[in-house]
Amino acid sequence: MLDLSMTGLHRCSHIHKALGQLDAFRGRYLEQRRLQIAADLQPPPNFLEGYQAYLAQVKHWMLLGCVLLVARSAVACVHVPS
Image (tube, rainbow, N blue to C red; front, side, top):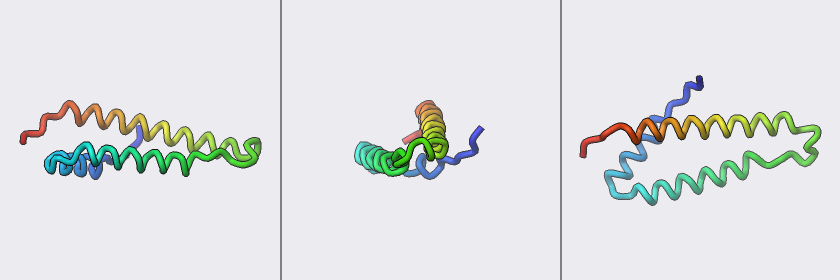
């Protein structure tokens, strides 16, 4: 299992929620993730020579996505008193 702390993301999410800015935070976060994925997952110019490194990057992005989904589900189940 990956040992990846999502504490910072959870903290930012709670702060923005308390400030009434959760939708804006979510939009900025998702846009930054899209830009990062587009930059990181460019196929190599000569795919046959660089496909293993490329597929490793894709695998890491997929694993991170799974961790984020699990963390999001866990946060959604936690009641935070106002």
